[in-house]
Length: 285
Image (cartoon, rainbow, N blue to C red; front, side, top):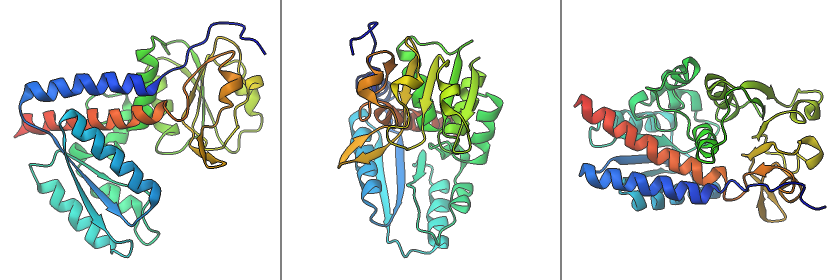
């Protein structure tokens, strides 16, 4: 099948590199380094890979990084104690608790314990409420923020556009729908109970898939000149794949790849949130 138009690959690696470079310069000029603390429970391979990536990214821009590691048998009160100590530590500006957590630890209690000013994942109720209200003085969740920034960096406006978001989870789908709506898009939220997914994606100007289902989005489900942002993470035959049929869709529409699309943007937004938290906390000191 030949390309019927010149399409773009929305390169998250290149865009994130640009953002990290600008952030490193801001931190260098400020003179004082922000500090990010990560709480990691257990030895989950994916979590270990994520925190290693975050540590490397922090070093690149000049953010101090610290990881508090706990065995998977750790009790919830020990994690809550570590969070409380971090909340009170004026030398730490950002805190994330790496998910997932073991079943005996209630994620809701853990997230609720984090100081909203240091909640660089944007998961607390306070920051979620800011997102709901379209306010800019909260810390936005990193992956939805990364999606919005990737679109912006490629000059893709959302105002007045029809956008279909596949996946309505708390971390990506729900906040992204709110952010798109606040930016003036007409948003359709699809999920596992959606009866005819194709009818919602075919006429959309922008489709964002965050379902975590390989090959969920095929070329016949999108129209030429549309934009596809693939947030899905799937392992297929040992290789990382998104939700979209990248090869087929890239012939007719602009698309972000997996890997190399939204993933690097998520890490870049975590760094940016840490810097924003640092500036706000420093101004209140």
